[in-house]
Image (cartoon, rainbow, N blue to C red; front, side, top):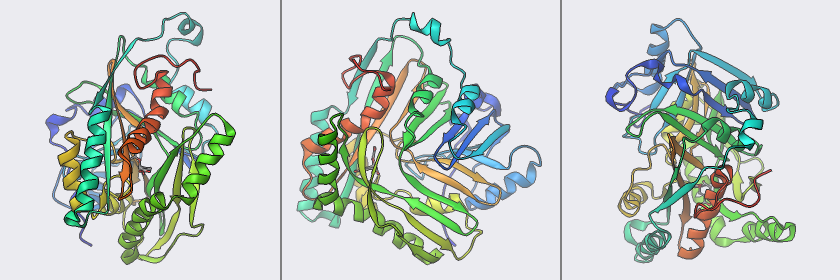
Amino acid sequence: MRMRGMRDEPAATWPARPDAAASLPFALVSGRETLIGRGCLGRLDPGAAPVQARVRDYFAARPDGPRVLVGALPYDMAAPAYLFQPAELTRLAGRSPLAQTLQSAFPAAPPAAARDTLPAPHWRVMAEPTLPAYRAAVAAALEKMADGEDDLRKIVLSRSLRLAADRPIDARALLRILARDESVTTFCVPVSGAEGDGAFIGATPELLISKRGEAILSHPLAGSARRHADPALDRAAAQALAVSEKDGREHRAVVEAILDQLAPYCLELGTPEGTQITSTATMWHLGTRIAGRLRDPALSSLELAALLHPTPAVCGTPRPAAARLIAELEGYDRGFYAGAVGHCDEAGDGAWHVAIRCARIAGGEARLYAGAGIVPGSDPIAEGEETSAKFAALLQAFGIDEDGRPLEEKVP
Ligand SMILES: C=C(O[C@@H]1C=C(C(=O)O)C=C[C@H]1O)C(=O)O
């Protein structure tokens, strides 16, 4: 099959030394599995050959080490992917031994007793773009849809928050807090770049694709509502989402695109439970589990991720028109945000999670991202509020609100 290219990075963009990613472990913790990778034996080289052929060549040349590549795929598929072989890999089924695993991979520093006496960091938060500018971008996209331009029916527009602390961010503590929400997949990808050594960290509720033998699974989400501390308000928000025509349309765009793209490669493909309301600690979503059986079990999880990405959950419909308008209206590089984080083994089995509810962290700085799906009928103010709600997962872990003020109530 012919897959769209997934190029790898020019060496200068990423650490030249393979062990430069060794300071923080790679971590991926979901309800299905826990992977902790330490150190780095090597990186997948750039090349014109299809990605799974390069993965096979990589392992053929290296008889040692775990037979798994881990890392992150950027939103822009023309940009470099970041895939490496950890020197050591701990892999467990499910989430149950999480507490101990995370404790040994990310030991708390400093110890809790000492930390209680330290003052909380002081944060500055800069919205890029500002909320009014984001609403204006949403309004501009709605106008283009109303004009019938490029037959655009859905576009996902994001905004970002730059956070600056008066001390280095404790990535390990952040990850431990995020992992308390058992409805999400918590991840940490150690990365270096222009901003220095750091990590791409997040807590995503969305599975792009997992593949084991012939069995594949995708769990797209689209259509969202903020959760509430008050149980009656919380239930009402879920009920309103379940019957919202606009959110249903937003959601179907994603499910139909994934089904259409996977169908030619599958013997069986379906949505056994239909669309359901799913939740994280901070958000309600519409979600549909898509399960299938591949015609060719040799098709790798990386090839499947490249086929599906970017879905209309992070880009839009039709894809080329939405991608162009995103580049025009957002005005920044999404980097790994809205890309994917995961792993792929020598045989191609693996899982790739949509990289949302995330932050790029380096030193005392963090850049957070959140987006919302826009369809005819969307309201720019409500979409801005939806992005604020989506920032909450990360902001709560940092202990601040969107203006950088300390939260009175810490997350449980
Ligand atoms: C783009 C994001 O989320 C995506 C968009 C959603 C929506 O528009 O309702 C819901 C879940 C995600 O697929 C994000 O969290 O940044």
